[in-house]
Image 1 (cartoon, rainbow, N blue to C red):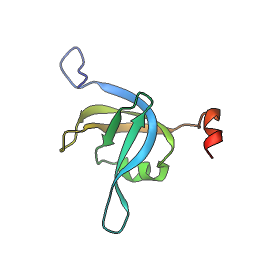
Image 2: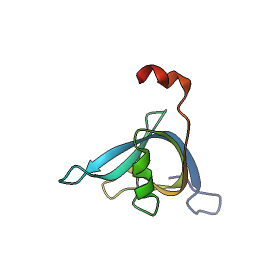
Image 3: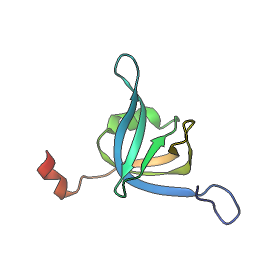
Length: 95
């Protein structure tokens, strides 16, 4: 976990692709994660941004938040803010 000089959890910035990580019995996405270019995966902890984030699945985003751990021990982030980014032109070949 990243900590500031005074011992508080530090705010970090992550850039990656939003991915669904859990679904309910009806197939609705109930948990979202972000996969970064360095192959780290972070679970987005539930919060005010969760519903809006689900509208950006499989999109490149920049997330600002505080790192922590999910209940199951996975790396997690409490989102403070996020922005959807334009896809790099190199992604066009995957369309």
